[in-house]
Length: 155
Image 1: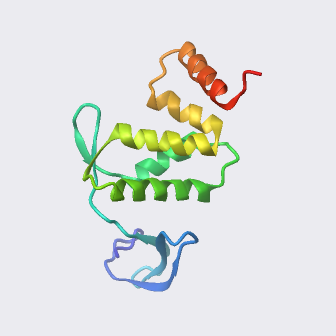
Image 2: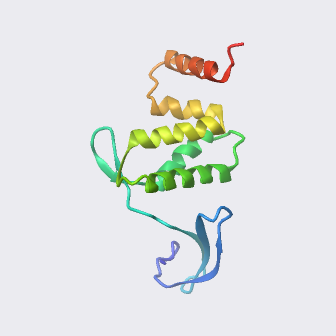
Image 3: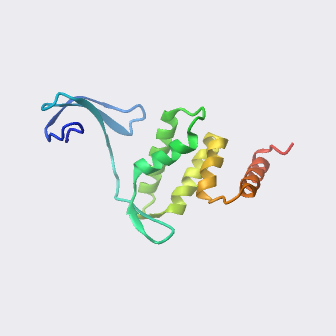
C-alpha cells in the first residue's frame, strides 16, 4: 500500500480488525520511509458494477459517491454516521447480489430513497429534491403533501 503522505510503496500493517458491522477490515498502517501512520479499509467486492446514467453514459460504481450523497442528505440531522455507513453497505450488497453487472442510476436512487424514508424524513425530502429534480417551491409542496398523506400528517 502506497503512503498517502510521501508516496513510498512499502508500508507495514500494524493492526487489523473487522469493523463493527463486519463489512470491512480496518488496517492501521505505518510508513517505513516517513514514519506516518494511516488507516485503510478493505472491503469485499462481489462483482464490478457499472452505473448507466440517464444520458446513456456508463461509469464504474463509486461507493464513495453514494456515501457522499447520503452524507449531504443527512447533514445537520440527528443521524448516527454508523447508520449511514450501514445503509451504504446494504445498498452496495443489494446491487452486487442482484445479478446485473449494469445498474441504472434510477435503481440506485430508488434504493437510497427507500432507505432515507425509513431513516429521516428531512433527509428523505432533501435527497428527493435533487433526485426528482424539483424546479420550484410548488414541487416541494406537492412532494411533502404526498409524504404527509402517506404518514398521516393531514390530521
